[in-house]
Length: 347
Image 1: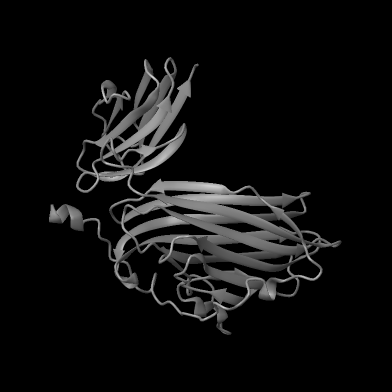
Image 2: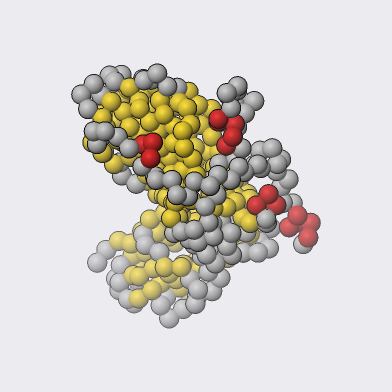
Protein backbone atom coordinates (compact mmCIF):
# COMPACT_ATOMS: atom_id res chain seq x y z
CA UNK A 1 0.00 0.00 0.00
CA UNK A 2 2.85 2.36 0.79
CA UNK A 3 4.25 1.86 -2.69
CA UNK A 4 0.90 2.72 -4.25
CA UNK A 5 0.60 5.77 -2.06
CA UNK A 6 4.12 6.98 -2.77
CA UNK A 7 3.67 6.73 -6.52
CA UNK A 8 1.44 9.78 -6.35
CA UNK A 9 3.86 11.98 -4.48
CA UNK A 10 5.61 14.00 -7.12
CA UNK A 11 8.85 15.87 -6.59
CA UNK A 12 8.32 19.39 -7.80
CA UNK A 13 11.30 21.64 -8.38
CA UNK A 14 11.50 24.48 -5.94
CA UNK A 15 12.46 26.70 -8.85
CA UNK A 16 9.05 26.13 -10.37
CA UNK A 17 6.94 26.84 -7.30
CA UNK A 18 9.08 28.38 -4.66
CA UNK A 19 10.25 31.79 -3.60
CA UNK A 20 7.54 34.03 -2.23
CA UNK A 21 8.37 37.69 -1.71
CA UNK A 22 6.11 38.94 1.09
CA UNK A 23 5.14 42.56 0.61
CA UNK A 24 3.37 44.48 3.35
CA UNK A 25 0.77 46.32 1.35
CA UNK A 26 -2.31 45.41 3.36
CA UNK A 27 -3.12 49.07 3.97
CA UNK A 28 -2.83 49.91 0.28
CA UNK A 29 -6.12 50.97 -1.25
CA UNK A 30 -7.33 48.55 -3.89
CA UNK A 31 -8.22 51.57 -6.00
CA UNK A 32 -4.83 53.26 -5.61
CA UNK A 33 -3.03 53.40 -8.91
CA UNK A 34 -6.13 52.08 -10.69
CA UNK A 35 -8.48 54.93 -9.81
CA UNK A 36 -9.55 56.69 -12.95
CA UNK A 37 -10.51 60.27 -13.62
CA UNK A 38 -13.07 60.58 -15.00
CA UNK A 39 -14.76 57.47 -13.66
CA UNK A 40 -14.79 54.83 -16.41
CA UNK A 41 -17.88 53.08 -17.68
CA UNK A 42 -17.90 49.59 -16.11
CA UNK A 43 -19.00 46.53 -18.07
CA UNK A 44 -19.02 43.18 -16.22
CA UNK A 45 -19.06 39.84 -18.03
CA UNK A 46 -21.03 36.89 -16.69
CA UNK A 47 -19.15 34.83 -14.12
CA UNK A 48 -17.68 31.55 -15.39
CA UNK A 49 -17.65 28.78 -12.76
CA UNK A 50 -15.46 25.66 -12.66
CA UNK A 51 -15.85 22.97 -9.98
CA UNK A 52 -14.10 19.81 -8.83
CA UNK A 53 -14.25 17.45 -5.88
CA UNK A 54 -11.17 17.76 -3.73
CA UNK A 55 -8.76 14.89 -4.50
CA UNK A 56 -6.70 12.85 -2.05
CA UNK A 57 -3.48 12.84 -4.06
CA UNK A 58 -1.15 14.88 -6.25
CA UNK A 59 -2.74 14.72 -9.66
CA UNK A 60 -2.88 16.72 -12.90
CA UNK A 61 -6.01 18.75 -13.62
CA UNK A 62 -5.17 20.32 -17.01
CA UNK A 63 -8.39 22.35 -17.28
CA UNK A 64 -8.76 25.63 -19.16
CA UNK A 65 -11.35 28.08 -17.79
CA UNK A 66 -12.05 31.05 -20.06
CA UNK A 67 -13.99 34.31 -19.92
CA UNK A 68 -14.11 36.89 -22.72
CA UNK A 69 -15.27 40.44 -23.46
CA UNK A 70 -15.76 42.12 -26.84
CA UNK A 71 -17.01 45.56 -27.88
CA UNK A 72 -18.08 46.39 -31.45
CA UNK A 73 -15.38 44.15 -32.92
CA UNK A 74 -12.90 46.87 -31.95
CA UNK A 75 -11.94 45.68 -28.48
CA UNK A 76 -11.42 42.15 -27.19
CA UNK A 77 -10.24 40.86 -23.83
CA UNK A 78 -9.57 37.19 -23.03
CA UNK A 79 -8.99 35.80 -19.55
CA UNK A 80 -7.73 32.22 -19.28
CA UNK A 81 -7.12 30.36 -16.04
CA UNK A 82 -5.31 27.10 -16.67
CA UNK A 83 -5.86 24.91 -13.60
CA UNK A 84 -2.70 22.85 -13.90
CA UNK A 85 -2.06 20.57 -10.91
CA UNK A 86 -3.38 19.67 -7.48
CA UNK A 87 -0.38 19.16 -5.19
CA UNK A 88 -1.03 17.25 -1.98
CA UNK A 89 1.07 17.99 1.15
CA UNK A 90 3.40 20.32 -0.75
CA UNK A 91 6.56 20.99 1.27
CA UNK A 92 7.20 24.52 0.00
CA UNK A 93 4.04 25.70 1.78
CA UNK A 94 4.47 23.78 5.01
CA UNK A 95 2.79 20.59 3.84
CA UNK A 96 -0.43 22.28 2.70
CA UNK A 97 -2.37 21.26 -0.39
CA UNK A 98 -1.79 23.62 -3.34
CA UNK A 99 -3.51 24.21 -6.66
CA UNK A 100 -1.17 25.50 -9.34
CA UNK A 101 -2.91 28.02 -11.65
CA UNK A 102 -1.61 29.77 -14.77
CA UNK A 103 -3.10 33.22 -15.44
CA UNK A 104 -3.23 34.42 -19.05
CA UNK A 105 -4.69 37.83 -19.95
CA UNK A 106 -4.61 39.26 -23.46
CA UNK A 107 -6.34 42.28 -24.99
CA UNK A 108 -6.53 44.19 -28.25
CA UNK A 109 -7.91 47.72 -28.73
CA UNK A 110 -8.04 48.85 -32.38
CA UNK A 111 -9.24 52.36 -31.50
CA UNK A 112 -7.69 53.90 -28.40
CA UNK A 113 -5.32 52.15 -25.98
CA UNK A 114 -5.08 49.99 -22.85
CA UNK A 115 -4.52 52.00 -19.69
CA UNK A 116 -4.24 49.35 -16.96
CA UNK A 117 -4.78 45.72 -16.00
CA UNK A 118 -5.77 44.76 -12.47
CA UNK A 119 -5.99 41.10 -11.28
CA UNK A 120 -7.38 40.07 -7.89
CA UNK A 121 -7.96 36.81 -5.98
CA UNK A 122 -10.56 36.72 -3.19
CA UNK A 123 -11.78 34.01 -0.82
CA UNK A 124 -13.83 34.10 2.37
CA UNK A 125 -11.99 31.20 4.02
CA UNK A 126 -9.55 32.40 6.67
CA UNK A 127 -6.12 30.80 6.47
CA UNK A 128 -5.89 30.03 2.77
CA UNK A 129 -3.49 32.14 0.70
CA UNK A 130 -2.66 32.96 -2.92
CA UNK A 131 0.97 33.45 -3.96
CA UNK A 132 2.57 35.08 -6.97
CA UNK A 133 5.81 33.03 -6.97
CA UNK A 134 9.05 34.94 -7.61
CA UNK A 135 7.10 38.13 -8.22
CA UNK A 136 10.29 40.17 -7.98
CA UNK A 137 11.14 38.98 -11.51
CA UNK A 138 8.44 41.27 -12.90
CA UNK A 139 10.14 44.32 -11.41
CA UNK A 140 13.65 43.60 -12.68
CA UNK A 141 14.98 46.29 -14.97
CA UNK A 142 16.77 43.58 -16.93
CA UNK A 143 13.55 41.66 -17.33
CA UNK A 144 13.85 38.53 -19.48
CA UNK A 145 10.61 36.88 -20.58
CA UNK A 146 9.74 33.19 -20.31
CA UNK A 147 11.29 30.60 -20.58
CA UNK A 148 14.20 32.28 -18.75
CA UNK A 149 11.76 33.76 -16.22
CA UNK A 150 8.42 32.78 -14.68
CA UNK A 151 6.36 35.54 -16.30
CA UNK A 152 5.55 37.00 -19.68
CA UNK A 153 4.38 40.60 -20.03
CA UNK A 154 3.94 42.55 -23.22
CA UNK A 155 3.38 46.35 -23.16
CA UNK A 156 2.71 46.19 -19.43
CA UNK A 157 4.71 47.22 -16.38
CA UNK A 158 3.85 46.22 -12.77
CA UNK A 159 2.89 49.00 -10.37
CA UNK A 160 1.25 47.46 -7.28
CA UNK A 161 0.78 44.02 -5.79
CA UNK A 162 -0.36 42.15 -2.70
CA UNK A 163 0.76 38.64 -1.84
CA UNK A 164 0.01 35.77 0.57
CA UNK A 165 -2.77 37.33 2.70
CA UNK A 166 -4.29 34.92 5.25
CA UNK A 167 -7.34 36.91 6.34
CA UNK A 168 -10.74 36.58 4.69
CA UNK A 169 -11.26 38.71 1.58
CA UNK A 170 -8.55 39.77 -0.86
CA UNK A 171 -5.80 37.14 -0.92
CA UNK A 172 -3.56 38.64 -3.60
CA UNK A 173 -3.65 41.16 -6.41
CA UNK A 174 -1.41 42.47 -9.16
CA UNK A 175 -1.73 45.77 -11.01
CA UNK A 176 0.02 46.67 -14.25
CA UNK A 177 -0.05 49.83 -16.35
CA UNK A 178 0.05 50.06 -20.12
CA UNK A 179 3.40 51.17 -21.60
CA UNK A 180 3.23 53.96 -24.20
CA UNK A 181 -0.55 53.70 -24.65
CA UNK A 182 -0.49 50.19 -26.15
CA UNK A 183 -3.14 48.73 -28.43
CA UNK A 184 -2.26 45.16 -27.44
CA UNK A 185 -1.20 43.76 -24.06
CA UNK A 186 -0.38 40.34 -22.65
CA UNK A 187 0.26 38.89 -19.21
CA UNK A 188 1.13 35.24 -18.49
CA UNK A 189 2.23 33.87 -15.14
CA UNK A 190 1.65 31.36 -12.34
CA UNK A 191 -0.32 31.70 -9.11
CA UNK A 192 -0.48 29.18 -6.28
CA UNK A 193 -3.67 28.71 -4.27
CA UNK A 194 -2.61 27.37 -0.86
CA UNK A 195 -5.67 25.75 0.79
CA UNK A 196 -4.33 25.14 4.33
CA UNK A 197 -7.33 23.02 5.39
CA UNK A 198 -8.55 19.45 5.75
CA UNK A 199 -10.38 17.55 3.02
CA UNK A 200 -13.79 18.22 4.58
CA UNK A 201 -13.45 21.95 3.78
CA UNK A 202 -15.00 23.42 0.63
CA UNK A 203 -13.14 26.37 -0.93
CA UNK A 204 -14.44 28.99 -3.36
CA UNK A 205 -11.88 31.23 -5.05
CA UNK A 206 -13.08 34.33 -6.91
CA UNK A 207 -10.70 35.77 -9.50
CA UNK A 208 -11.32 38.77 -11.70
CA UNK A 209 -9.51 40.91 -14.22
CA UNK A 210 -10.33 44.61 -14.53
CA UNK A 211 -8.94 45.98 -17.78
CA UNK A 212 -9.37 49.73 -18.31
CA UNK A 213 -9.02 51.12 -21.81
CA UNK A 214 -9.76 54.30 -23.74
CA UNK A 215 -11.90 53.89 -26.88
CA UNK A 216 -11.25 57.36 -28.35
CA UNK A 217 -14.34 58.78 -26.65
CA UNK A 218 -14.27 57.65 -23.01
CA UNK A 219 -12.69 55.17 -20.60
CA UNK A 220 -14.21 51.71 -20.16
CA UNK A 221 -13.43 49.16 -17.43
CA UNK A 222 -14.11 45.59 -18.56
CA UNK A 223 -14.48 43.16 -15.62
CA UNK A 224 -14.07 39.43 -16.30
CA UNK A 225 -14.80 37.15 -13.27
CA UNK A 226 -14.05 33.45 -12.84
CA UNK A 227 -15.07 31.31 -9.85
CA UNK A 228 -13.23 28.11 -8.90
CA UNK A 229 -14.95 25.77 -6.42
CA UNK A 230 -13.13 22.88 -4.74
CA UNK A 231 -15.76 20.79 -3.03
CA UNK A 232 -15.11 18.78 0.11
CA UNK A 233 -15.25 15.02 -0.42
CA UNK A 234 -18.64 14.00 -1.83
CA UNK A 235 -19.28 11.72 1.14
CA UNK A 236 -18.62 8.05 1.79
CA UNK A 237 -22.04 7.05 3.10
CA UNK A 238 -25.75 7.78 2.69
CA UNK A 239 -25.59 10.05 5.75
CA UNK A 240 -22.83 12.22 4.27
CA UNK A 241 -24.05 12.23 0.66
CA UNK A 242 -23.64 15.56 -1.15
CA UNK A 243 -26.85 17.22 -2.33
CA UNK A 244 -26.66 18.04 -6.04
CA UNK A 245 -28.86 19.45 -8.81
CA UNK A 246 -29.28 18.26 -12.39
CA UNK A 247 -26.23 18.85 -14.58
CA UNK A 248 -22.60 17.74 -14.75
CA UNK A 249 -20.41 17.23 -11.69
CA UNK A 250 -16.66 16.52 -11.51
CA UNK A 251 -15.69 13.90 -8.93
CA UNK A 252 -12.55 12.09 -7.77
CA UNK A 253 -12.05 8.50 -6.58
CA UNK A 254 -8.98 6.76 -5.19
CA UNK A 255 -8.89 3.00 -4.60
CA UNK A 256 -6.90 3.57 -1.39
CA UNK A 257 -8.28 6.72 0.23
CA UNK A 258 -11.61 7.49 -1.44
CA UNK A 259 -12.99 4.47 -3.35
CA UNK A 260 -16.62 5.65 -3.54
CA UNK A 261 -18.77 8.77 -3.55
CA UNK A 262 -22.40 9.29 -2.53
CA UNK A 263 -24.78 11.94 -3.91
CA UNK A 264 -28.43 12.74 -3.33
CA UNK A 265 -30.97 14.57 -5.49
CA UNK A 266 -34.68 15.30 -5.08
CA UNK A 267 -36.94 13.40 -7.47
CA UNK A 268 -40.75 13.47 -7.64
CA UNK A 269 -42.89 10.36 -7.98
CA UNK A 270 -43.27 9.54 -11.68
CA UNK A 271 -40.23 11.46 -12.88
CA UNK A 272 -37.47 9.70 -14.80
CA UNK A 273 -33.97 10.09 -13.42
CA UNK A 274 -31.11 9.51 -15.85
CA UNK A 275 -27.58 9.10 -14.49
CA UNK A 276 -24.33 8.64 -16.40
CA UNK A 277 -20.76 8.40 -15.08
CA UNK A 278 -17.61 8.40 -17.23
CA UNK A 279 -13.87 8.58 -16.55
CA UNK A 280 -11.81 11.68 -17.33
CA UNK A 281 -8.05 11.94 -18.02
CA UNK A 282 -7.32 8.43 -16.70
CA UNK A 283 -9.14 5.14 -17.48
CA UNK A 284 -11.27 3.91 -14.57
CA UNK A 285 -13.64 0.99 -14.02
CA UNK A 286 -16.59 2.78 -12.43
CA UNK A 287 -19.75 1.14 -11.07
CA UNK A 288 -22.99 3.08 -10.70
CA UNK A 289 -25.85 2.47 -8.25
CA UNK A 290 -29.24 4.16 -7.70
CA UNK A 291 -31.13 3.94 -4.40
CA UNK A 292 -34.64 5.00 -3.42
CA UNK A 293 -35.39 7.43 -0.54
CA UNK A 294 -35.79 4.31 1.62
CA UNK A 295 -32.22 3.28 0.64
CA UNK A 296 -33.39 0.33 -1.45
CA UNK A 297 -31.20 -0.50 -4.45
CA UNK A 298 -33.36 0.19 -7.52
CA UNK A 299 -30.88 0.03 -10.43
CA UNK A 300 -27.20 -0.45 -11.14
CA UNK A 301 -24.67 -0.45 -13.98
CA UNK A 302 -21.52 -2.47 -13.27
CA UNK A 303 -20.12 -3.58 -16.60
CA UNK A 304 -16.36 -4.05 -16.46
CA UNK A 305 -14.73 -1.25 -18.46
CA UNK A 306 -11.35 0.42 -17.96
CA UNK A 307 -11.02 2.41 -21.19
CA UNK A 308 -10.82 6.18 -21.03
CA UNK A 309 -14.18 7.85 -21.66
CA UNK A 310 -16.35 4.75 -21.32
CA UNK A 311 -19.48 5.27 -19.26
CA UNK A 312 -22.08 3.54 -17.13
CA UNK A 313 -25.70 4.69 -17.43
CA UNK A 314 -28.96 4.26 -15.52
CA UNK A 315 -32.48 5.39 -16.43
CA UNK A 316 -35.22 4.79 -13.86
CA UNK A 317 -38.79 5.98 -13.22
CA UNK A 318 -39.17 7.05 -9.59
CA UNK A 319 -42.01 5.46 -7.63
CA UNK A 320 -41.57 7.71 -4.60
CA UNK A 321 -40.90 11.41 -3.95
CA UNK A 322 -37.84 12.32 -1.96
CA UNK A 323 -34.04 12.26 -2.05
CA UNK A 324 -32.74 9.54 -4.35
CA UNK A 325 -29.17 8.44 -3.80
CA UNK A 326 -26.44 7.92 -6.39
CA UNK A 327 -23.36 5.87 -5.54
CA UNK A 328 -20.19 5.89 -7.68
CA UNK A 329 -17.64 3.16 -6.94
CA UNK A 330 -14.11 2.79 -8.28
CA UNK A 331 -13.69 -0.98 -8.68
CA UNK A 332 -10.28 -0.86 -10.37
CA UNK A 333 -6.91 -0.35 -8.62
CA UNK A 334 -6.32 3.23 -9.72
CA UNK A 335 -7.37 6.80 -9.04
CA UNK A 336 -8.63 9.70 -11.12
CA UNK A 337 -11.42 12.02 -12.22
CA UNK A 338 -14.90 11.20 -13.41
CA UNK A 339 -17.89 13.16 -14.64
CA UNK A 340 -21.33 12.48 -13.18
CA UNK A 341 -24.23 13.70 -15.35
CA UNK A 342 -27.80 13.76 -13.98
CA UNK A 343 -31.06 14.54 -15.78
CA UNK A 344 -34.63 14.47 -14.50
CA UNK A 345 -37.54 14.32 -16.97
CA UNK A 346 -41.32 14.14 -16.75
CA UNK A 347 -43.88 15.30 -14.22
